Image 1 (spheres, rainbow, N blue to C red):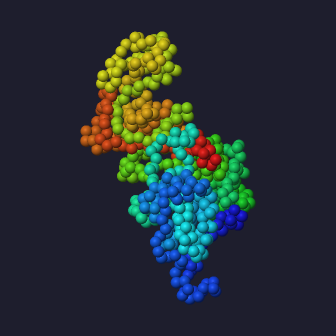
Image 2: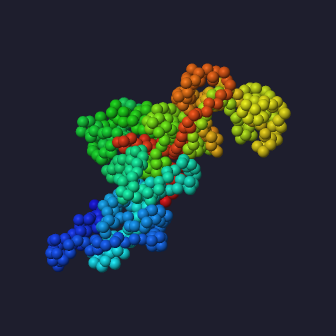
Image 3: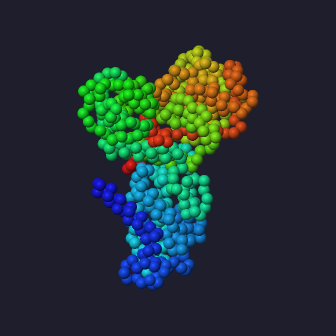
Length: 586
């Protein structure tokens, strides 16, 4: 066993031994003579098990928390926790440690399984306090130790729980990662009260468990990837690799090892299941069959391509080769970063909501917590990145106008508007209006000084009329926000066949707008698919207000997994993973 692993194992075993209640009771007394010095009846029960329990006060808690680097940042949670319980100890009952202490320290010892560093939460003074507590004879000193241990255990919990439930990094502080999705509002003091069985909760704090199954799935994926790493990792294929089904190549052995965990083909190869990490078996390849890119391996490549969001062609080159050669360590870190993002999300989603995963280029609608609808989307290009935030959808707009941003007027249209304003706008099916909504009045474009106009002096709106040329297509879905981002149709349906679909100026284009509109208006008797399409055909803008606002989440997840830990990856299209990694891993 490597020295580091042996050392951490011994530390873990030591802590568990210290917290074992039977051992604690035996050491403090009992009917047996364990040491040869105690006589039967001398100590019938542990020292100081009778009498009032020690209490704390606010100054004691403040001094203890601030004096310890492990949990000094968690002072506010400790103050709230003890204030709520009138400064009674939390981790002792009848002067004995409660079982939750042992459970918590065991969970922290395995924090690496969650992509966290156990050493960050381990108070070096705590084992010494526990050792002394086990043997102390003086009642006053024992009461003092109970106070010290109690605050240390609370501080340890808050330090770990802050990272585990709320996140290691602050998403609002992460450079270049404007994560503005509403955050969870976990109150760690109440979570600890739940763990100590002093309050009820619908969340799994009792078990020190995650809040989302998606997080747990990623945790399983992390374990599988690390198992593969410990078994030898995976090979890198030559940069010149180009394989088609049925071809013969020396690279096939490496490809098989990369995807199936073994080099040789045939009935002796271990069976694989999705997400299963197999050891690398380095055997001499068979003279011919091991070098043939056969049907079994082609299917494995197609599965890999689907998991990476690529067309399942079975051909190994280009982007497929690049994805195959991403280092295992990078994939492990990618999973950890996305586990972190799940800590940032609310404790639970509403029963009905809409979610767009930007790097996946996909939209999901959930009803009653179950997926009701999904479709492809187009998101913003790198220079016009779709922001990560949440809001509530309020309107469905049929036959919408497209209001042209001033940046497009300035950078793309100004010369043509100066030379021929009326002809340019007629050709583009556009108009200039003054005012908004029903009060908007069309004006003569020749009356505008297009050569010198700037945002401060442009008191009009340049818009494209509803119709086949409209950039927003036939439907727009509005969730009012400061980013002016919304979902909408597009006249360029051919772009949805692309693998990488970051083409927009920031808004999200949806593949099936009529289907989405029909679903959102399903509880409105006057609006079915036929009435929606009839209204669109009139080419007159129509706002429909939703009776119940629908929560919308635009998130950025580059890795996710199923219940078996079978993981899917996507490209870090905006560099948010890279920025977060600097903060998370240091």
